[in-house]
Image 1: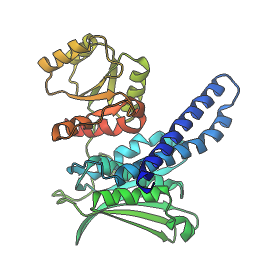
Image 2: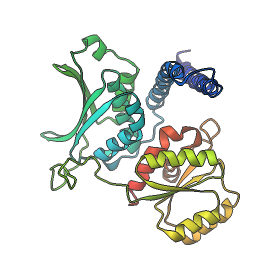
Image 3: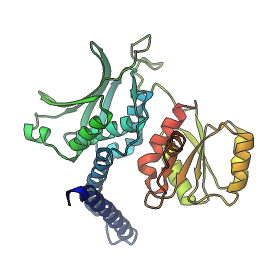
Image 4: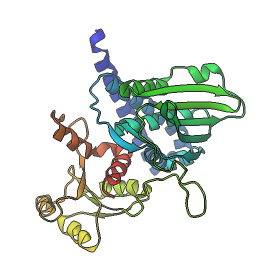
Length: 353
């Protein structure tokens, strides 16, 4: 039976996620029918979302621990990754009353981008349960060369040692991500005015010629080192609901985006201005998708295309080989837009603009 524990845990977490999703949909229906007030709905939604997040974290631990995660170490700007996470979760943090102050210095690492993104998300999840005010710092130590990402949670009085050092689901996920990468060290400590969580990265590259902080025109520190504000993205889907969901996520990143429903509309938009990324819904494709693929190959062979595909439960497993792995990086499951699309768009745009 011991050999089947991963499968059992996976089945339990999938059931938990599906059950919570059904509960949340039911609550939405009750609010729409006037049977439940928005405030009452929020009281029930908050613990349900916590249960879902716990199940998702467990799924991530199992996936990383299984050794099935295929890593591709790349040179990335860690500040850009962290800022992407903060922008993606901006509305959620605001609703929870959580404030984040950040002070970044540009640091380049060799790390799997998805792993770096997941680590940042997990650090934030670990931190927000302890307090509503976070000081986030990113800098570099030279002897030995290390990049350090720290989150200091400010509290009125120091929390108990047991609360900080308990091995909860968020901490277990952090440890598993660090073990999967092999080049990350984690530290947590209680200080006079709060708690500090630090991730130290060993595979740091040489710092830029100027290691001073970047500043905006008014002299304030800049927290975005690769801007995507000038990018233009098209979302092509025959499903109005999917188009609206995807557009909402992309625009939250500060990216200009429009929705189209056919090959003709897509090509017309490309004639009007430069398109940096096309998000193509292959679960609800336009009726003339064959023509769209032909025209893209003939006239825009270098355009980056991010594909929305069928949910994980129905999708075929990727084949072995570098080409297949790279292709998988350009796919986002339709049932995981809110969790995956923002980071996929930011990483794709960082390579094309």
